Length: 323
Image (cartoon, rainbow, N blue to C red; front, top):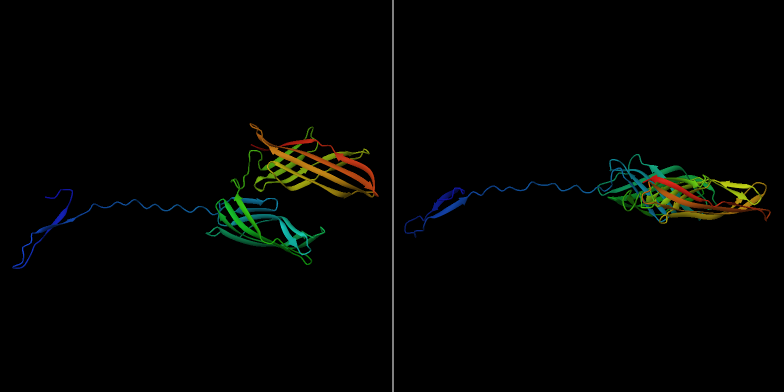
């Protein structure tokens, strides 16, 4: 008798026919197996986003190439771009440097399923400079291709300028960008924060301002207003603006010399030096910057020295974004 847990159908198979050997009847059991319960199907996880929606990607290559790409809020196309480079050449033998190739993207520049996008734009009223510094108006075409892979993207830029008497080209410029806030494009370090800084010398003289963009590792602009005195009792003053000063760790600076023309046949040979560094003190609510500015000029008339002037070298101090 079969167990109650197993239902079976018993079939008897017997020998048949006269004279045949008699075979015993063999019970054949056909068992009904219990139903098999398979685990539910789990859909595979979606692939990681190739371009993060609404993110800004930035990158730099020393002091030669800067790149920025903005992804639209949908994550399916680019919304803006900005490039700067210092490696092109012009037909007159001069360099072709571009520090402001930027624009919004209203349409096109679709990011496909592989993370690839391309874009080209013609600027009809652009300008460049000849080898001697003369400004020339012409047309500029900026085109680039880029491939996103999550927090990183790589691409190639081409920039060409064309005027009647001057033609310039960047050639192929490779670039790498990282999503802002990631390790490749940090917005903040223990010593520096992206943002605006303001300060002055003690007593309020020599006011200055600085704008830092850490993903590009630059002080985007540094402006100051200074005064100095001359040996003859005259006064000198200036309001210089410095752009794209590279950060080397926490430090930045610029120095140089120039020949200046003044009224009444006077001319001068000047020298300047700006230096500074950023820092943050434990428990402080702000990031801070300290800097120094030195300027001197020797003034001549018909080859004879008539005066010397210089700025006082005050210690400059300022604060930046709140921590």
